[in-house]
Structure formats: structure tokens, C-alpha cells
Length: 254
Image 1: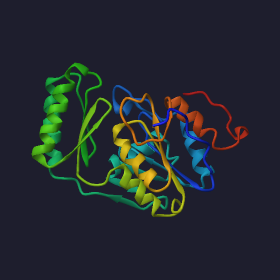
Image 2 (image 1 turned 30 degrees about the vertical axis):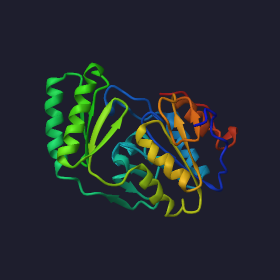
Image 3 (image 1 turned 120 degrees about the horizontal axis):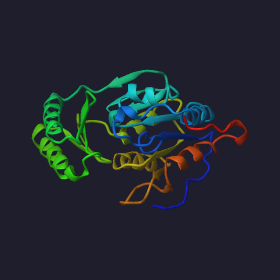
Image 4 (image 1 turned 120 degrees about the vertical axis):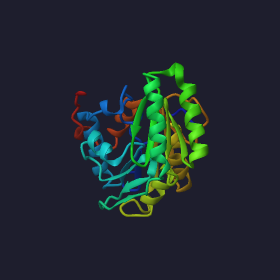
């Protein structure tokens, strides 16, 4: 991985895929505390316009949460790491939930009752156990996730201070490939921007299709991303360079 920022992309030939948490939005003590920010919404909306609609958000959050945080600024989006997807034309696809997700929810709720810092996030197609507020109990969360994944047939998805058990199926790379097979993305060069281990599949898919990945944050592990941006502020600033500066009235974060 290079530590250099990504180059200015050709707006006529590129497609942009963005993770949400840790890339466009900061982490919060509770997922629902992340809300809309005027500058972020404007940056994403204007980048989508500059790219003629070839911009999609690919997140671990459900589609309805992506829409809430970005105020409906993005038409194309994939949620729950690719298990649900909405095309640029508005057509929506959603996997069938694995029956063991309900069992995992019950186990995670029991753990949260016993460990006050744990937080359970139920997404229908998956369930996440957050331990950002109980780092001393991270081993308990990780062990529980690994055990359930092995015995219940669910996919273990590790993230930033979270273990998630999800319905087996599409990942972020699969979502990118699906978008790239459809208009308006077809034939463009894909660029995937993300911060987490879950985004590595997106970096790999972008490279395979002639594009590249951009890792956000410190280089704490090997990555398939070719370029890097330091943090969320750097991502927003980079998005704001995609169109002439005069088209970007500076806004304060609300």
C-alpha cells in the first residue's frame, strides 16, 4: 500500500464507491447517534452529480440507515455488507435472512445484559455486538462471535470494535461487481474508499476491474488498497476536489 493520496480521477470515466462509518462519518458510542451533516451530504451529492450518477455507498449499515445519515443524497447503495442492494434505477434486492440470525440475536442480548458496555445492533440479515464501550471485554465478544459462527452456520464479520454474525452471501466486493455490471457504472474505472477490514473485498474487486482502492486511516494491517487518506476530513476534502472549487461553497459541520 502506498501512503500517498489518490490522484484526481477522470470524472467521465470513473465510478466511486464509498464506505460510510469510519470513511464518511465518525464512529459514535451508539450507531444511531451518527446523523446527517450538511457538509458531508453536500460533498456526496455533488460528487454523484459530477460523476453522472456513478457513485454508490457500500456499508455495513442497512439501506434505510444509509438514507437517513446521507439524507437520501445517494440513489445507488448496498447495505449489510452487500446483502441488500439498491441499483441506481431504484430496484432493490435483499437476501433471505438465515434462520440462525434470531438465535444469535438472543445470545448477544444475553451477553449485553451481563456486560453493561456491550451494545447489540439487530439488522435483520445480521446482528452485531459492539464493544467500543467495553474494550476490556473484547475477548468475550470475539469468542462468542467465533463460537456462534461455527455452530450456527453464520458468517463472522469482524470490524472496528464489533463482531457481526450475518447471513452468508454477498460481500462488499460482490456489491461493487454487481453495480459495475449495470448502468450507469458499466465500463467505468472503479474506485473504492473504505477504512475497515470489511472493505478489503471492495479494494480487491476494484483492482480486478481496472481501478483501485483507497484506505482511510493508519496502516495497521496489510491491505489491497493502492492509496491512502488520513481520516474522514481528508476524504471529504478529496471529494470536494472532484468539481471546480467555485462550485463548493464551504460549509460548517452542524
